[in-house]
Image (cartoon, rainbow, N blue to C red; front, side, top):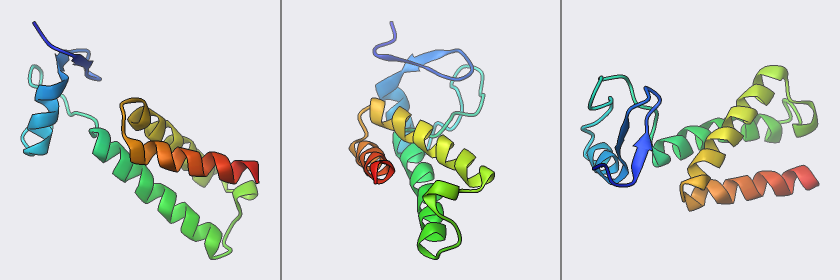
Length: 109
């Protein structure tokens, strides 16, 4: 039986610890059963979200835009950042939860 199953986007379930070990060894980038491409793991989600967030923060700090008036494309990207960080945070990634806290604090200002 599969222990602590993780449902993959393709619909297959796979042992979460086994999948994490394969990812850490750069072995599994596809479903072991059907070879469909896997989404990024926790660290991958956090890294992708953080890079996008950092790029948009840079735009705000350079005065190219403000948080209140982000262009539609950047607002959509920030929505994706929040979704990725929420997913990573829900799975225990503390760095993702920290950034979500920073975003919430910025929104309150």
